[in-house]
Image (cartoon, rainbow over all chains, first blue to last red; front, side, top):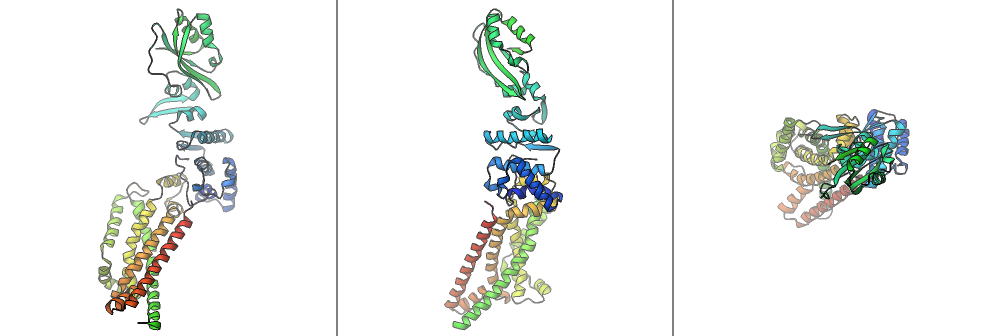
Length: 240
Length: 218
């Protein structure tokens, strides 16, 4: 388990902190030393073995926390808001380390967070809780592809206040796996003679796939046909 | 009193003071620390979470701390005689000194250990620590700098209390100051004794601060 506030023992060095669970498990001294060295290398803190937690940065402290947890060779690593106290850059490096551990060691990581960017970066599947209830659950790339999912609306924030130009149609178009590579906006203009304004939109790479959402204001005689065309191509289309 | 006689009396008194303070400090830490830890772990919401037991310990400690030391010294006379076989002298003074210091240090230890971040206990439990491992691998090492400062307070406070040990013929520096300095108007003895006490307190505090600083890994 790794924690938001690291929870390292301030009276122990980095190496002694990592050795702590091994002591509790009753490992021999020689075994402990070898294991600690291996773990220090794994999290990239070989140089800091004899430092005290107070001498480390937040990111380094969390690396110690991760190494300490891995000492017990867990099947599941529980990460309780582990990056919430870190700056964005350090967060990224810790997430990269976690992803690396997940891939190299086949370690399952249960990650608790309120930062959607964290979910976006490293999660495979997600469950969103509200007042103790699971209100949404599924694979991250499935959920982001649905324009109405809570996850998608967190990752692709929409404009909430707008004044639609008279005669225009407001639609949200979600790009998913295959469709994201299509140059659809220019196709729409050419084939259906449509004018559009982009109210909001972004494209993200999630789990190595391009997904995105655009909130469009469409004008033209053939808007309905255009939207039908998009729908047939596999876009998720939602008209407001 | 002057010259060699003064020197001899001061030397004798210092040894008595040292004897009383050292042994009562040892006993107070030996018994007060576990009592303080019990106060911490039985407190509502802590690892043992036993509110009624906590109340018992807490009331016991408060009662022990309510007695003015000079009263305790007299009230405990039969107990002292039972434990050490005599009710006069430095050794006899050890009993009331220790008994007063135990609840005092228990409270100091309690506050020091409470300062340890609750998250560390959570982490220790997540790593499979049992109750005793949490005590001696987490709580005590993490609270150690604060405990050392607490022991410093304890020593200085015992140095103070030991001055009253004169009431049971316990001797010591405080007694010397009262008997010769105050009751016989020997200003020289009074000042010399107080000077020694001032220096002692300074040295004790300095050493305590230094040790706590060395233990605090920052």
